[in-house]
Image 1 (cartoon, rainbow, N blue to C red):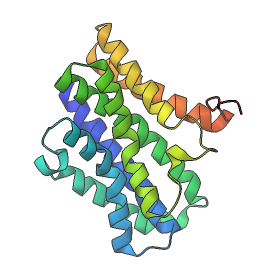
Image 2 (tube, rainbow, N blue to C red; image 1 turned 180 degrees about the vertical axis):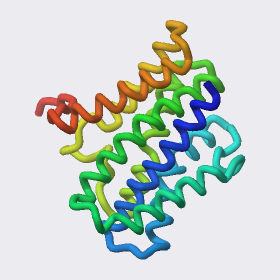
Image 3 (cartoon, one colour; image 1 turned 90 degrees about the vertical axis):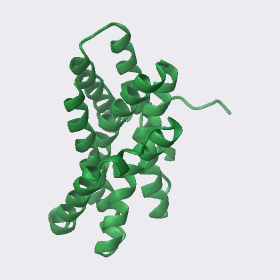
Image 4 (tube, rainbow, N blue to C red; image 1 turned 135 degrees about the horizontal axis):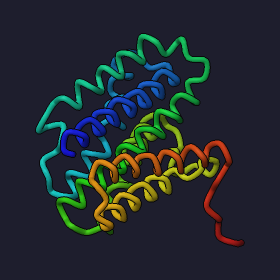
Length: 203
């Protein structure tokens, strides 16, 4: 299971780096700007998680995440001009990263604290924090705060909660990881396609 967690984490780093790089390309940034903005969502959420949990920051312990993010940034720099709708690609790359990171974050927090509540909170934070930093640097309203975005942090919450529930039910660890990632991604994907959103307070 530990090996699978590493692969999921690296996959999340890669796709979130692409989302950050695509955001930089949309803002006409140069190569350095693309690299910086790729790193923000790729390592931002995990950094916040590790600092809150008082754990060694993952990319300081191993530089692999940085190299994976740089590869994602480089590929985006080379091929982004072939994409017809960069915003659409950004949204879907972000959805994949969100699903991967929320579950990886929840798993790590559950191991460290043993608290499902903390695990869910850290899962959401891991999934959304990096994207918030990315959007703030781009001088845009973060996706998580946009009224026209559906089930963003909610999808991370659902994925994190699914993992904690499956862990409580003693479901096999790898099955629980894959199922939770699928639930989180499906929640976000269906919300994008069908326009799902949470109810607002009555005025």
